Image 1 (cartoon, helix red, strand yellow):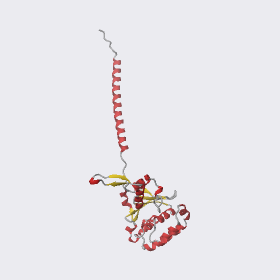
Image 2: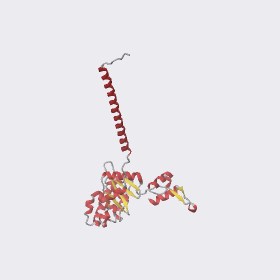
Image 3: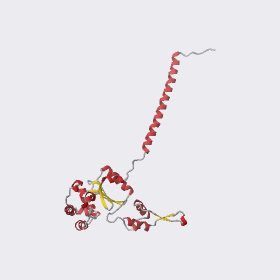
Image 4: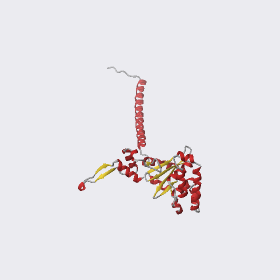
Length: 268
């Protein structure tokens, strides 16, 4: 039997080739595992839920005129307008609230008289807001709306899961939020990023009123589903629960259009 001897150089070449292939496989395998790990980590971070915003956070930013000065308790909206225009520091230094309130009201009357085109464009009657400022013990929301528009201020007014937004012009400052809390209004003096988050929460969860003076239209203007959506955002039940006989489980019956409309009217 004859054996065929390979040259030493050829044997070395085969061994080196085999070693290179093994190393290559190892590197490829490690690279593959690393790649899978990266994808896994990335996927985990992508599906992590974003931090939720809770409206109770706003309590720390509340500015309540009545809590700062009992003399301001009779007209919280007027003093919130004062704080919005002049700042909290000036409000805290008022010595005579009665005198300052009258001076401020007459200044607002002059402002509104000079801004008739703005009021007309927003369907606000000058005579009505002027009457409110001069002859009424406290100002109404429509008057605050008029002041905000004439001073080019954006404003969100929140009350019992419903809200109304006053939109200033393109150059207006924005984001101010006031909310009715235990019978009087408070103003939120908070950073812009907190204001943005709360505004987003309000818009997603509360009902937007179309008109601050007449929040709801006649029933004929709504479809049944429209009223269901409004009731849901106001936190009102949309079904009647009919109790079962002799302690058996009750049944639910969807409220009719008149029933929903009546419940919403009581709320607004």
